[in-house]
Image (tube, rainbow, N blue to C red; front, side, top):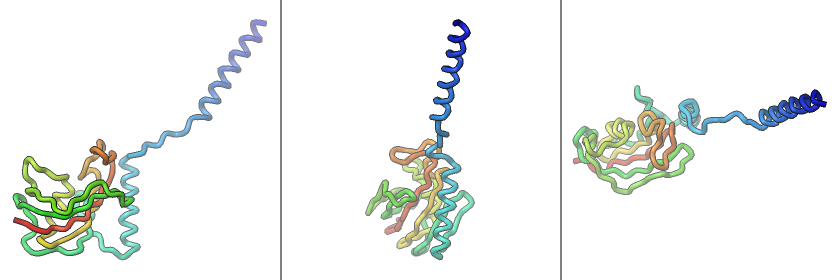
Length: 162
């Protein structure tokens, strides 16, 4: 009788283990550098298919210049007024302004590095779309409504430089 109870216990444990293992799904990280790289690659490929010229920098910033604007271009210390829309790659808007003024690369008013790099390609009246990888934005931690490892799109128009 003891052997029968012991066998039953072993079978019960095995059955429980099988149920547990079969119910487990592989956990997929919702945000990762690999997923981000794939999203960026898809975006760049989509632009190419649509014959939209995309430039890039050594930091991974991609940009589409609609209009360069007048010379001189934005430089460190300039007071810049822009109109912008910030969105995710699915076009969901997370921030926008019709008139935002800031001092470019000011110590106390730093923008994300990708914004600071991209805006220097524009002068007064210039406009562009920037695809900023998370390494040049909010990185592996994210910020507020921006998840970790999230590339960001910014449509920016420079209306004034002083």
